[in-house]
Image (cartoon, rainbow, N blue to C red):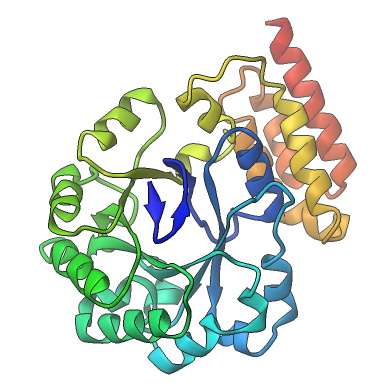
Length: 312
């Protein structure tokens, strides 16, 4: 599979706000993710050289192909963002037309643009005209339940220079509930010549195969990787023992280069709870893991949980 002139694999880690930090991406990459995306970046924050945004744009040493996702609704500002020196190191730039979060939608960004296809097309054109790099897009199939615009959006994206499109098989109204619409993903794939990446509910080999049956060129995994960065190894049938605590430690050690322990103790809690979600005997530690204010104490708790699990 090629995105414009860049050869990539088939399994991608989704850009997830507040989740796809540099540490998590590095671990997912080490377990076989072919592409890892920096979480979505506000084009306004990018243009104002926001310090927090600069940290989000840090990339791991094993991210050989660097991908960033940006969002906004002003074609001119989006084009300026694409040309920002802060994005110079990135190989691929992705546009978010799918985020369902209310704080994003109320400003006319993310999936709100699925209600204004003319503006969506202008954003695609302004961004692809501003760079020679591949520009891709991520969408949902529509905004409201009965408003399926996925094929129209895909054609607009292709006509305006987008090099690949990722389709999450739900509407904005569905958020993350209900079933993925595989039929629509298949129709999108059949309607355009650019690569199409399927997204939604891929958590194991069975669900991966179901997504691949749509004919998509690649598969993006989001929630299926939460607490399971080794899912990429599992889906590629790579043999070997997975040391889950070592994965967590690598995640934390990477982030410690950019953030204080005080900051990480709060932001990593959700990751820690995801890591032990399916571990037998972890329930008695969850409250403490969710409330401790010392990062090393959290790591010691996690080590204890996995050591006890090995004894089961």
